[in-house]
Length: 402
Image (cartoon, rainbow, N blue to C red):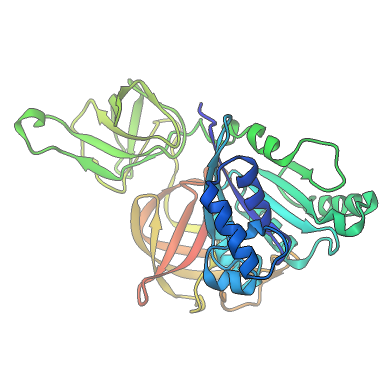
């Protein structure tokens, strides 16, 4: 199993130093060109800094630089000899919680910064809760700006204790504290070594079909393959499979990739699967094993983060996108709104506003093949689209059938 790519997201309160930390990681990993460093040095002088402000490497938008904050999710890529990395540097302001959800949705690890002077703030807790709701398996708490509290060990330990007490309600078991008054592993070394291969679901075969390949030429007139990205499990040539929702059965005859045929595929490989039997398979269908199948249904329970200015309404109708399948959904019931600062459930709420989270009962016009989000993030997530504006209205995590 390849473990050469780590996706991680940064989170925390405003001015905790997220962008500066990312800039330092890029610098330490020798992932910057000389002209980039020179440009940051010039811009630092122009903005009146008496030091090289590495935050300018990630705060790329002009509005971000002028305000000294991160507004949008800034993706950065770098590599060391041990691993490749994709960073999602997310905003700290409460009004940009939806951006944090977007950046964290595919992360293997969440890096939460805490200002040693302020301790755990509302936003620190908010982002930690969002990371937990998204079932990010690894948390790294970076206690930053220890120089401004004279490297006080007591301040470091107090924040550790506060965070552990707050996180005792979480499902995450891998929580590491780094930076400041510290004698452990440096951050970059930890990011290189953290084990993520076992985080992926290699048990439940889930292959959503994205495209049916039928070349229209004489040389390949018999070729029929089903292309897509393997969401979970290990699929091998010779495996028995079932197509959902039709229930038709066959065996895997071959697995093709851009580089040629392979005998097995695993997440997140993009492959074309050929079957022994000429059965009806189309976009939106899902291949799985006969004795290990997802739930198939039209009523689902889900936690949804609301991403648009137009509030969610009970009985509201939305387009729904789940893996490669599209349908329409109606909100049958808003069970409660979750206060992600206190984890209090407001069962009297009648709507969800921008950046709010709540539990919904949705009814879908076509059957979905889904798993609990906790079991598989790919088949357990979906988006809702406001068809009037074509805006992404909500990001959902499936809890199970309703």
